[in-house]
Image (cartoon, rainbow, N blue to C red; front, side):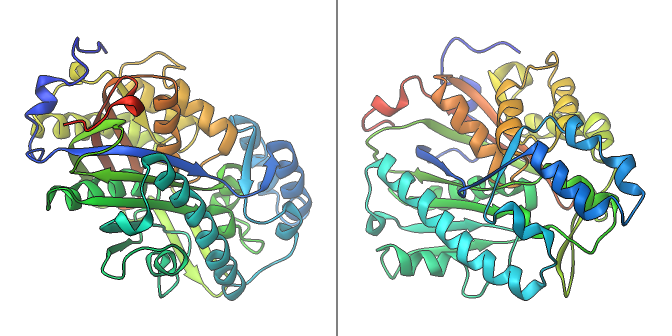
Length: 378
């Protein structure tokens, strides 16, 4: 994969849907205070499950094979020792999702040099809890946004929510000149832990899931600094795959669905979906300096490296984020993008993620060298 000479590829300039330039002007991340090492998570899971099901002994190696060193949780590790019902989890979701969203949003606003009242649209993405009024309304009440701020709450996109939420924000700002949009993506995956579910999916989720939030400022107007120019976007939903990833819902809360076919689908079908998107956008893989992938798990990362023609370890930032934070679902890909930006990388970048549906999501962004110093970028 070769980077073009110019950091703004001519092919990306003429990609469909980019008549009005959408700019990423700030990006921020946030995690809750409780850090749980993988060793501690493994020991706690052993205490909860080992004597109740022989399945745990067979699946215990996943804690090592997941290549996760730690993750962050909105609750201390002791909380997981006792069952909690949906009502309790809903209360905790509202408390912690709002707090993390405010944290990430405040950081993003500060990074862009904006006040909340300057934001025209607010996009909130989350699939790990249900609350009405939603996160968007709570943010309006916690930060001094204008009462006429356009609000778009998005539920059900799962791990694809970071990329598709960014795409929806781009589409909003492209609809009106000089529009400023705040994207907030928050997931509390650890609240989906099920004390009562002696299933493979629940045990695998225990080894993978963490909590986190990310926020971004996207605008079609002038900006103090520009991290990147957002371009073509697309998605691909495979029919007949409703059982691949998602939630079942009952009185005890959300029960994760993980199908063992996920790495196989990535290995055998992702490339076709990727090429289809690139073709519709009049791009080719050589136009992309680097992918920016959601690291759903070690096997998925390895399959994505193969799909992009990279050697093992080529998705280095993805592996770092997975190791340090686990799979946080939707915000994880934005944690990866934040690493790429802070490392000073530039050029055409392709964000991609896989989520329920089963769906692949794509969004191009041309990262600008030393973007924070760029003023009034086009």
